[in-house]
Length: 219
Image (cartoon, rainbow, N blue to C red; front, side, top):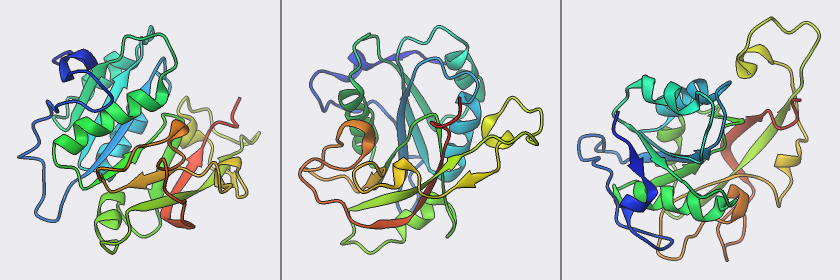
Protein backbone atom coordinates (compact mmCIF):
# COMPACT_ATOMS: atom_id res chain seq x y z
CA UNK A 1 0.00 0.00 0.00
CA UNK A 2 1.67 3.31 -1.01
CA UNK A 3 2.62 5.73 1.74
CA UNK A 4 1.40 9.25 1.11
CA UNK A 5 2.58 12.22 3.17
CA UNK A 6 0.63 15.45 3.44
CA UNK A 7 3.80 17.30 2.41
CA UNK A 8 3.66 15.48 -0.94
CA UNK A 9 0.54 17.45 -1.73
CA UNK A 10 2.11 20.91 -1.54
CA UNK A 11 1.97 23.70 1.02
CA UNK A 12 -0.70 26.00 2.31
CA UNK A 13 -4.23 25.32 3.49
CA UNK A 14 -5.24 24.12 0.03
CA UNK A 15 -2.83 22.25 -2.18
CA UNK A 16 -2.62 20.37 -5.49
CA UNK A 17 -4.43 17.06 -5.41
CA UNK A 18 -2.69 13.72 -6.01
CA UNK A 19 -5.85 11.61 -5.90
CA UNK A 20 -6.48 9.88 -9.22
CA UNK A 21 -10.25 9.52 -9.32
CA UNK A 22 -11.23 9.48 -13.00
CA UNK A 23 -12.21 5.83 -12.73
CA UNK A 24 -14.06 6.41 -9.42
CA UNK A 25 -16.33 9.24 -10.49
CA UNK A 26 -19.85 8.20 -11.46
CA UNK A 27 -21.98 9.97 -14.08
CA UNK A 28 -24.20 11.30 -11.28
CA UNK A 29 -21.26 12.78 -9.34
CA UNK A 30 -18.86 11.86 -6.57
CA UNK A 31 -19.15 12.15 -2.79
CA UNK A 32 -15.97 12.02 -0.70
CA UNK A 33 -15.59 11.34 3.01
CA UNK A 34 -12.57 12.88 4.74
CA UNK A 35 -11.12 12.45 8.21
CA UNK A 36 -8.02 12.31 10.41
CA UNK A 37 -7.19 9.72 13.06
CA UNK A 38 -4.74 8.78 15.78
CA UNK A 39 -4.80 5.44 17.59
CA UNK A 40 -8.32 4.31 16.66
CA UNK A 41 -7.63 0.61 16.13
CA UNK A 42 -10.82 -0.46 17.91
CA UNK A 43 -13.01 1.20 15.27
CA UNK A 44 -10.76 2.25 12.38
CA UNK A 45 -11.51 -0.61 9.99
CA UNK A 46 -15.25 -0.72 10.71
CA UNK A 47 -15.77 3.02 10.31
CA UNK A 48 -13.73 3.36 7.12
CA UNK A 49 -15.34 0.31 5.49
CA UNK A 50 -18.73 1.83 6.34
CA UNK A 51 -17.79 5.19 4.79
CA UNK A 52 -16.53 3.40 1.67
CA UNK A 53 -19.98 1.82 1.40
CA UNK A 54 -21.72 5.15 1.93
CA UNK A 55 -19.46 7.34 -0.25
CA UNK A 56 -17.40 7.05 -3.43
CA UNK A 57 -14.00 8.08 -2.09
CA UNK A 58 -12.40 8.22 1.39
CA UNK A 59 -9.37 10.40 2.16
CA UNK A 60 -7.87 10.22 5.66
CA UNK A 61 -4.80 11.50 7.50
CA UNK A 62 -2.86 9.40 10.01
CA UNK A 63 -1.76 11.76 12.81
CA UNK A 64 1.15 9.77 14.27
CA UNK A 65 -0.73 6.62 15.24
CA UNK A 66 1.27 4.21 17.38
CA UNK A 67 -1.27 1.36 17.40
CA UNK A 68 -2.52 -0.85 14.54
CA UNK A 69 -4.90 1.73 13.06
CA UNK A 70 -2.81 2.34 9.93
CA UNK A 71 -2.11 -1.36 9.43
CA UNK A 72 -5.82 -2.20 9.62
CA UNK A 73 -6.76 0.51 7.11
CA UNK A 74 -4.05 -0.46 4.65
CA UNK A 75 -5.28 -4.07 4.84
CA UNK A 76 -8.68 -2.99 3.50
CA UNK A 77 -7.03 -2.78 0.10
CA UNK A 78 -9.70 -0.61 -1.50
CA UNK A 79 -8.27 1.69 -4.21
CA UNK A 80 -10.90 4.28 -3.28
CA UNK A 81 -9.18 4.75 0.09
CA UNK A 82 -6.31 7.26 0.26
CA UNK A 83 -4.24 7.44 3.46
CA UNK A 84 -1.85 10.31 4.08
CA UNK A 85 0.64 10.94 6.88
CA UNK A 86 0.08 14.02 9.02
CA UNK A 87 3.33 14.14 11.02
CA UNK A 88 2.59 17.24 13.11
CA UNK A 89 2.02 16.58 16.82
CA UNK A 90 0.13 19.86 17.17
CA UNK A 91 -3.66 19.60 17.18
CA UNK A 92 -4.30 21.13 13.76
CA UNK A 93 -7.68 19.53 13.18
CA UNK A 94 -9.16 22.28 11.03
CA UNK A 95 -6.07 22.65 8.86
CA UNK A 96 -5.72 18.91 8.35
CA UNK A 97 -9.40 18.37 7.55
CA UNK A 98 -9.33 21.17 5.01
CA UNK A 99 -6.25 19.59 3.43
CA UNK A 100 -7.99 16.24 3.09
CA UNK A 101 -11.06 18.01 1.70
CA UNK A 102 -8.88 19.88 -0.79
CA UNK A 103 -7.42 16.59 -2.02
CA UNK A 104 -10.92 15.23 -2.56
CA UNK A 105 -12.11 18.47 -4.18
CA UNK A 106 -9.15 18.44 -6.54
CA UNK A 107 -10.17 14.92 -7.51
CA UNK A 108 -13.61 16.20 -8.50
CA UNK A 109 -15.73 15.58 -5.41
CA UNK A 110 -19.19 17.15 -5.58
CA UNK A 111 -19.83 16.77 -1.83
CA UNK A 112 -17.53 16.52 1.19
CA UNK A 113 -18.50 14.47 4.27
CA UNK A 114 -16.08 15.28 7.13
CA UNK A 115 -16.33 12.50 9.72
CA UNK A 116 -14.67 11.53 12.99
CA UNK A 117 -13.71 7.95 13.80
CA UNK A 118 -16.09 7.93 16.78
CA UNK A 119 -19.08 8.73 14.55
CA UNK A 120 -21.33 6.41 12.54
CA UNK A 121 -22.86 8.44 9.72
CA UNK A 122 -26.04 7.29 7.97
CA UNK A 123 -29.27 8.46 6.41
CA UNK A 124 -32.73 6.97 6.79
CA UNK A 125 -33.31 7.95 3.15
CA UNK A 126 -30.62 5.71 1.65
CA UNK A 127 -26.91 5.63 0.90
CA UNK A 128 -25.26 8.91 1.94
CA UNK A 129 -23.71 9.51 -1.47
CA UNK A 130 -27.01 9.06 -3.27
CA UNK A 131 -28.88 11.22 -0.76
CA UNK A 132 -26.43 14.12 -1.05
CA UNK A 133 -26.29 14.01 -4.84
CA UNK A 134 -30.08 14.07 -4.88
CA UNK A 135 -30.35 17.33 -2.93
CA UNK A 136 -31.39 20.50 -4.85
CA UNK A 137 -28.45 22.34 -6.41
CA UNK A 138 -28.99 25.40 -4.22
CA UNK A 139 -28.26 23.35 -1.07
CA UNK A 140 -24.56 23.85 -0.36
CA UNK A 141 -24.49 22.86 3.33
CA UNK A 142 -26.43 20.28 5.30
CA UNK A 143 -26.25 19.62 9.03
CA UNK A 144 -26.69 16.35 10.92
CA UNK A 145 -28.81 15.15 13.79
CA UNK A 146 -26.98 13.11 16.41
CA UNK A 147 -27.89 10.39 18.87
CA UNK A 148 -25.68 9.36 21.79
CA UNK A 149 -24.71 5.70 22.05
CA UNK A 150 -25.53 4.47 25.56
CA UNK A 151 -23.95 1.19 26.80
CA UNK A 152 -26.33 -1.25 28.46
CA UNK A 153 -25.67 -4.21 30.80
CA UNK A 154 -27.31 -6.45 28.21
CA UNK A 155 -24.91 -5.44 25.42
CA UNK A 156 -23.24 -8.47 23.80
CA UNK A 157 -19.56 -9.20 24.23
CA UNK A 158 -18.34 -7.59 21.02
CA UNK A 159 -15.19 -5.44 20.70
CA UNK A 160 -16.84 -3.28 18.03
CA UNK A 161 -18.76 -0.55 19.93
CA UNK A 162 -20.86 0.38 16.92
CA UNK A 163 -22.10 -3.19 16.67
CA UNK A 164 -22.23 -3.81 20.41
CA UNK A 165 -24.11 -0.67 21.52
CA UNK A 166 -27.50 -0.45 19.87
CA UNK A 167 -29.32 1.66 22.45
CA UNK A 168 -29.21 5.37 21.66
CA UNK A 169 -30.91 8.49 22.93
CA UNK A 170 -31.85 11.71 21.15
CA UNK A 171 -30.94 15.14 22.41
CA UNK A 172 -27.22 14.62 21.95
CA UNK A 173 -24.82 17.49 22.53
CA UNK A 174 -23.96 17.02 18.87
CA UNK A 175 -27.52 17.93 17.88
CA UNK A 176 -27.30 21.44 19.34
CA UNK A 177 -27.18 24.23 16.71
CA UNK A 178 -23.51 25.07 17.36
CA UNK A 179 -22.25 21.50 17.56
CA UNK A 180 -24.04 19.68 14.75
CA UNK A 181 -21.77 18.23 12.09
CA UNK A 182 -21.71 19.42 8.48
CA UNK A 183 -21.46 18.04 4.96
CA UNK A 184 -21.02 20.51 2.10
CA UNK A 185 -20.62 21.18 -1.60
CA UNK A 186 -17.15 22.51 -2.48
CA UNK A 187 -16.87 26.18 -3.36
CA UNK A 188 -14.27 28.94 -3.44
CA UNK A 189 -15.50 30.48 -0.18
CA UNK A 190 -16.23 27.24 1.69
CA UNK A 191 -13.75 26.44 4.43
CA UNK A 192 -14.54 23.86 7.07
CA UNK A 193 -14.47 25.21 10.62
CA UNK A 194 -12.86 23.57 13.65
CA UNK A 195 -14.68 20.42 14.72
CA UNK A 196 -16.51 20.04 11.38
CA UNK A 197 -19.39 22.10 12.80
CA UNK A 198 -20.05 24.14 9.67
CA UNK A 199 -18.40 26.44 7.13
CA UNK A 200 -16.64 29.64 8.08
CA UNK A 201 -18.85 32.64 7.38
CA UNK A 202 -21.89 30.54 6.39
CA UNK A 203 -25.07 30.32 8.47
CA UNK A 204 -25.94 26.83 9.64
CA UNK A 205 -29.24 25.51 8.29
CA UNK A 206 -31.57 23.23 10.20
CA UNK A 207 -30.62 19.52 10.07
CA UNK A 208 -31.06 17.76 6.76
CA UNK A 209 -31.21 14.04 5.91
CA UNK A 210 -27.94 12.91 7.52
CA UNK A 211 -27.71 11.31 10.96
CA UNK A 212 -24.89 10.30 13.34
CA UNK A 213 -24.63 7.70 16.07
CA UNK A 214 -21.96 9.15 18.32
CA UNK A 215 -19.75 7.22 20.73
CA UNK A 216 -18.12 10.28 22.37
CA UNK A 217 -20.27 9.61 25.40
CA UNK A 218 -18.99 6.01 25.64
CA UNK A 219 -16.29 5.51 28.25
